[in-house]
Image (cartoon, rainbow, N blue to C red; front, side, top):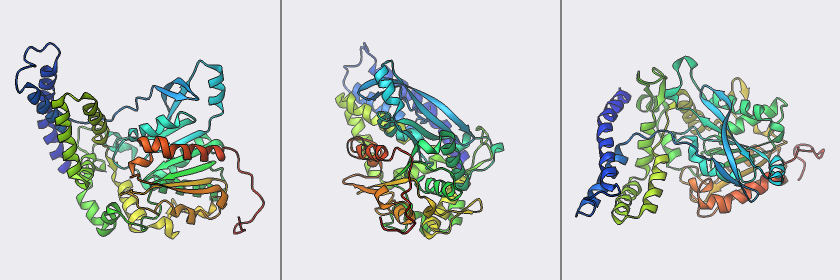
Length: 427
């Protein structure tokens, strides 16, 4: 019922929002004879603020058409490499007319970025992808809004997520692949590679895990506490709702994006109120640069997707409440997840010093689980002054984190050659 109420409310606010947009455009139009009148700028700013607070935020485009690679500006085309009901594997194909640049790009490592399925769209990693394109061939998991997936396509669980990751790795080719997982997918990625290793399949050349809850019992944050202090029945009864008739996924149970967004805002409401007030002041001053930065941030931040209910509840129960992965008790489709089976993949873990979503030590826990990987093929980094988003987006990502990720991938961009040592031998 709550979903229907939300849609009804949105249908009422929609006309008001677009009326406010029209007013703002009219009052800001060049040549408007009333623009210099007292109070017009204030009225225009107020209308744009109302529009942005009430509008419906659709999924943004990646919009990566040009990138820099090996000192040259190159063209980029976004392609669907593999389509599944709940996710598209996207590739950002690079093109150049310069023969020397083409030869260099052919030798670049192949990277799969596994994006979170946790509220925001994969476009939140736009900066991650754009930066990686400098020196890599890049793929990304682009998760589909569950309300847009027909109910006939069935449910989607955490086990299904693991199976999707396995399929994507096989499709690209594990023998030449490096996998980067950001936040929530660190857990299913580690599970997928563990299962592949235990079966004797090829595994990626390296795994880079950034700010994820491998062991959420370490340095628990407010996110961890919320997941562990309430019973699973509370989540089922309070955040799971049914998609209404107007969408392809009508009848599917989901954790709606609008509830997730409300949760994001309530984590720090003062900061968001201050940001919107600053935006209003920027419009009054005519500071279009700062105003545009605000628009770009909230166009992304306010665009959310519905998560499949089963996947969300599985994550709450298995990852946070029971901590099955670090306890060695996780079974996926009848197979036990044993990270100790991973021997041929190098491992890099990255944490933000000020991360308030995945606390310090949660991602580092992967090293204890992956004890069969030689110590010289493992590394851990804590990024000083970085919060959760700073380790994969923004200036700190581009200038501090990325060079370390790039160098680690280059260091292990060759097939693993065992030294003949047995598990447990000193390294």
